[in-house]
Amino acid sequence: MKKILHCVGEVFKDCYKAFPAFFLLAMALDGLGVIAAMLEPVLLARILELAGGKPVDGVQLIQTIGAYGICLAYVPVSEVLFRTASQRADIKGAQYFGNKLVAFSRRIRLEVLENPETLDRFHRANAAENSQFVFFKQILLTVRNGVTCVGLMAVVGRFHPVLVLSGLLALVPSVLTKLYFEKKTTALRRMQSKVLRRLGYIRGLFSNKESIKEMRVMGFESYLIEKWNGTNAQRVEEYAQVNLDICKKQVWGIIVTNTGHVLNIALSFFLLIQGRISVGAFAACLSAFTAYESGMTVFLVMLFNAISTYHVVEDYYAYFTIPTERDGEVSYHPFQEAITASDVHFSYSGGDREVLRGVDCAIRKGEHVVIVGENGSGKTTFSKLLTGAFLPSQGRISYDGLSTEEMNRGSLYAHYSIVPQDFVRYWFSLRENVGISDLDRCEDTEAMEALLEKVAGSEFLENVGGLDVQLGKEYGGQELSGGQWQKVAIARGLWRESDIIILDEPTSALDPLVEYDVLSKFAEMIRGRTSVIISHRVGICRMADKILVMKGGCVVECGRHEELLAAGGEYAHIWQEQAKWYQNG
Ligand code: ADP
Image (tube, rainbow, N blue to C red; front, side, top):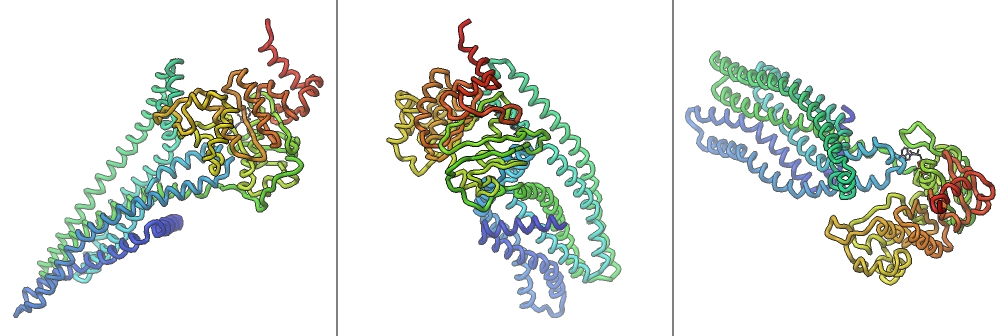
């Protein structure tokens, strides 16, 4: 109960912030609505009393009929007002709640994003869309109809107390069946969020041109369709079973509740013929029971809708409990000496295995370092710890002695540039694709053209059609090859004039000749900056000041190309293995 009240409080606070004028209007309309609904039967009884009086007090009768008319008209008029005003509030709410989600996502601890549970939670929070606004309206309607029904019972109770008791009893079965319904559907929805994400993923493969091409050529289209159908069939089956069970219980609830209402009317009629209530009171009871019945129906529907929306809204607010960046207090200052890793250990969230198992190394200012090693040896993971995106579970990474844990991460990121292995292809203009890493200089056409010429060659810009050409076929733009997209990603990394740059397998999509060319120019462009290149190809290592060789989550060798070759260890072994690819015979 405490959790529900807390959630309601959060929603009301947020709704007030998102649309204060509508919030106050809705409160006022609801308050008046309760008063109007309670006055209705009282005024009706009074009209009958006045009409039967001898002599008839005409003025008072007309005034009472007028007041009764106003009460009757209030409900439809207030509904029109509410509906019209709520359309604007709906849009404002969607913007407010969407922005809140995005603003929080920007602060989530990056290593937590590696956990699939986080993605499920994001999926559920995102699916809440504008449920907060819906919940707000449902709560208002629930409270309004609930209070009205209590008021109506108080009015009926004044005529005879037994009518209150019978009115309440009629509700019990309906409440129980609806509670059962909510419990079942919420459990089902939670259980199915993982399946839904999986379904979305498989369907996404059919709208991504790369995967479409691959599945068609490699012939696994039907396999994926079957996989999708199988997963979906299982989901539908689970739904069908729960729904059938719920449906049966609901039908019983409805039958029993309606029988209760009919009995209530019969009871008041019995009291009338017994002379225990007047004709006016009987008419007021009928009016109150009709209003009570429709009020109770709306109350119950809204209450249970609110309960099911509550679970969605709860998922939205639960998202905000995901750990955010453990930010240090100290602002990063460009380091002068070295970045040092001392006995660094790391495991992924939810993983039971250590991916880094005591990494020790130092990267001096201005050094060009290449990290090599077989796939899965921990190179990419280590680079994420270097940038402070992940924090070590044991040991420390420090910049001139200041550890990443103590540091304000935003201030560290500001000095970094990265070209990730899975670089993103933004379906924006070429200018935005490159300039997005430093938007302040985005309009410096000359500098951007010069950079692209170095990274992608002199004909690239001409072939693409200039900086302002839209990229990506999906939006009717110019499509690039995999290698060209990678060069654009490299240009984006270089465009940001950072102290440190990390490139993770930056040339994986380039052919060897182009690779050599790009890397030579690259070495020239990053002169004076500290760079870390991750690669499983050792060809790149000749131009490195330092090579770190990783194996099984540790740095097993460190030195220059010639030294490591002469040492005849792991590096020499990888070098010889790869050299075979390029030797004749
Ligand atoms: P490399 O860059 O050397 O190929 P990675 O750092 O990418 O290696 O991965 C090191 C190990 O960590 C691998 O065994 C990989 O399976 C595991 N790993 C990578 N990313 C994740 C993740 N998000 N969650 C759990 N394990 C991961």
